[in-house]
Amino acid sequence: MAKTGYGKRSTGDEDPHADADFAHLSGRERELAIFMDRLEDGHAAGYKAIAAVHPVYGQQAVRAAQRHLSRIGHLHRIREHITLEDNSMRWVTRTYWSRTPRSVEWWQEFARSRNGRIVTDDHQDGLARVEEAERTPPEAEAGQAPGEEPQTTVAYRTLAELRETDRRMPLSESDCRSLESLAAEWLSRGSTPEDITRALTAGLPNPVTNPGGLARDRLEKKMPPKKAKVRQKKPRLRGRVDRVLLACITCEADERTTEIADGMCRECRVELELETPDGEPIPTVPETFLAGPLLSAEEVHRWAAQVRAAGGLRSPGGKALWEGV
Image (tube, rainbow, N blue to C red; front, side, top):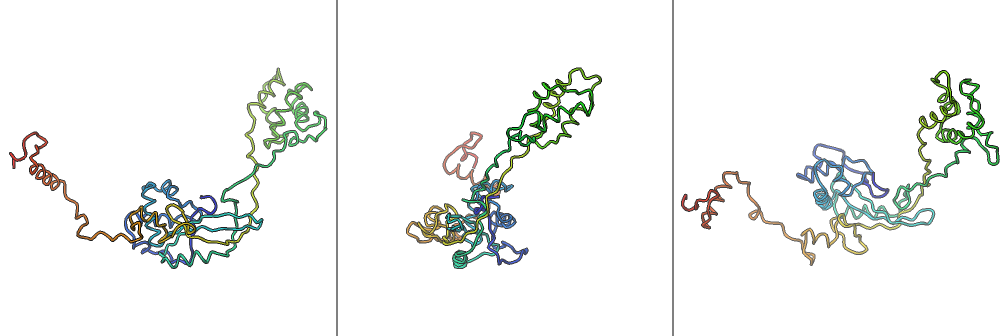
């Protein structure tokens, strides 16, 4: 999923799914339109993110297709200025998707209608920021109160009471003190005193010649994994959209600095040779100048031989081509 504010968002009020979806598109654009349409809202919609999960197309192909989808009216990027209830402000760039192709006027009206909307900002600044909760000290988790004597902790008492569960484990006071920190760590990782007792008394050899050494070995080798760190979520803040700008689908420049036409800025349209630096659209190539049907391999070899012969070149076998023509 994308960072908050940067994922795909459906415009709503669309035609229902049908077999004719994207029939006006062809090839790569149609495949990527179907792919993006099926993404759930919130999925990252940038060309790099799409290319990372698409099974066929890479970044440049996706980028080119998104430009085309923007010109057709399926995809637009809108920048919204939001003032939250804590009086903080931020710009958020949102990528809107419409299964139904929309006109330039429709997108302009849609963008303007966003102004004044109440929104909820789950993660401030568009980032999923979380803070780690302060970790409770192991001795507190083990039941030791500040200023209380060490021998009264749950960890110490659990070790001292082992002899009552199994007489083969009579730990001395010295053993209990040296092993107390290990037992406390077990407790801090979510274990109970009963878990420790079972771990230290199950399957004991007979006799136990070194109870303290055996207890240390088991406490170290059977130590449970650490608990996942506790994280606390930032409060969800409500805010109001107080300014909306259309942004370029390619470079994300917005209306504050450039003119946006068909989802792209003037500079990107010139770079993509969709118009001249003066703003005149570049005419389409006449059909008479377009490439014809592909030649077969035999035709290619025949034409290549004629070109070589006309230039007085030798054939790949070394014989002058005009000698064999």
